[in-house]
Amino acid sequence: MFTWGVSTSSYQIEGAASEDGRGPSIWDTFSRIPGAVANGDTGDVACDHYHRFEEDLDLMKWLGVNAYHFSISWPRVLPNATGALNKAGMDFYDRLIDGALSRGIEPWPTLYHWDLPQAAQDRGGWNNRDCASWFAEYAHLMAERFGDRIKNWVTINEPFCSAWLGHLYGVMAPGIKDLQTGINASHHLLLGHGLAVEALRQVSSEFKVGITLNFTPAITLGDSADDALAVKLADGFDNRWFADPVFKGSYPSDIVEAFGREVPIHSGDLNVISSPLDFLGLNYYFRQTVEYDAEATPLPYRQVRTPKVERTGMDWEVNAETFTELLLRINKDYAPKEFFITENGSAWDDEVINGKVDDPKRVSYLERHLDAMFKAKNLGIPISGYFAWSLMDNFEWAYGYAKRFGLIYVDYETQKRIPKSSAYYYRERIKS
Ligand code: FCB
Image (cartoon, rainbow, N blue to C red; front, top):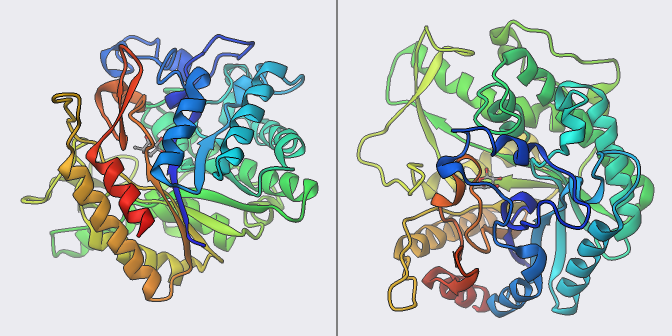
């Protein structure tokens, strides 16, 4: 059976940030830095999913999805990152998991979707190699408690964003701007992934375990050898830096060389990182256009605007054909046993008119990307599921609540949920 789902993540929807013993996360800290998040928004309340999850599960049931991809908030269950479990936090995920199962919806957790406990950051965060072991310890505890009801586990969501956006560009928590820290964080995130795979497999050999990587294909409009190099570097930085170690057990040598920095690899690390997986979670949003720029750091290229392309409310290019090509390419280069599209979606300026939200552009994006995915599937790529990003509008990281990705509209004043036209479309598509 094909897996039809929706995705969310803990910090983006749960709220209840200081309730029931939850510890602060790096996003609680980061969102309080003036100017870090649009409009000074924080995840303190978000969609209040912590209190409204039953209603949200009902909406999922109405949509007809058979799986719910959410993330567990590490600081909610382990406020000090390690040590004693927070009972109330664990109970929440018990209720969520049981609530999903009782509606015929398979719970599909990610263990890390960027909300690192601040307590871990205070000890160096992902720059500290020990963070990988803390993460594995946490993974083990989750598997022991929830493993009787969870079959599919995603270790880490988009290490690209954690490593590069959080530690190199500083536009996401923890807001560090340093190449070496970014490289360290990327390696320790991947090591954490590998150790977590081992920890999960220790609990049960029945689990299906994977990682979620976001892929951003690159093209250039230039025809020089330098522009071709720019494409290769962009692909290396965004895609190969994370997929190569996981699937091939090595970092891409061209990028290691171009960085000119040390990757803090200890003997055996790459074996751990490339421990066999049951599936790849693939997130796809857009394609980028790049050109060579000798002055750019950390690598000599920059993104440019392609003229005359359709763009979403994030200013991201819409390219559904690229999605098909990407799936074929990832299958060829990395041959994961199985693919799940763990995120795909678009933000638009939605408006409530007479109590309804009509979002034809999201419907069109969804339709074209589903078609593109099924095209790849029909060409023999082992794609077993699709999760739309996102169930509902939520805290879109540094963009705060200004960007809406939901199939369901959230009125943040009243917490009223309004299914958009795209939710009706998705529902029909699943039925058919
Ligand atoms: C992905 C993130 C997800 C959401 C979407 C729009 O990179 O994993 O949390 O922000 O982008």
